[in-house]
Every structure is written in structure tokens, then in C-alpha cells.
Length: 91
Image 1 (tube, one colour):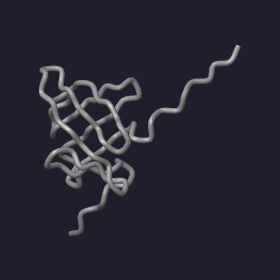
Image 2 (cartoon, one colour; image 1 turned 30 degrees about the vertical axis):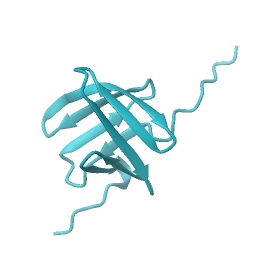
Image 3 (spheres, helix red, strand yellow; image 1 turned 45 degrees about the horizontal axis):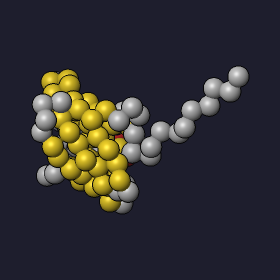
């Protein structure tokens, strides 16, 4: 029996603002979960990827878009980096 699964899309994973306040996880099943500060799952919904463009549809029906450019997610007015690649704030 072969239990191979397709590799998740390269954008799947945790994306975080530089200050760590907003954490958006793109899940491999086409859903996202966005935390804001201490508020877990502040926004949830589904997303689709077309090239470097992401369309979001919140569970309430709200829509938004994002684009990944040079490894950075530009989601409406937000700039998010991969969690492991998040820039550190200098003191």
C-alpha cells in the first residue's frame, strides 16, 4: 500500500507580522486561521492560490486578497513573513 500524499503548497504554514501581533496560518486543506494578539482564531475561512496571488473568503463572507513577492506575503495592508524568517526587531 502506497501512502503518498501530494506535497503541500509552498505557501502553507505560518505567516507573521514583524511585531508578532498577527499570525496567519495557511493550512494544507485550503483553510486559514488568523490570530490577532491574544485572540486565537480571530478570523477563519478558506483561501485559494493562483500563481503568487491569494484570495481569501472569511467564514462571515468577507473577502480579501494577498500577493507573495520575494517570499513576503502582502495581505491587504499587512506585511507578513514566514514564522522562521520573521525579521527581528532591533533594540
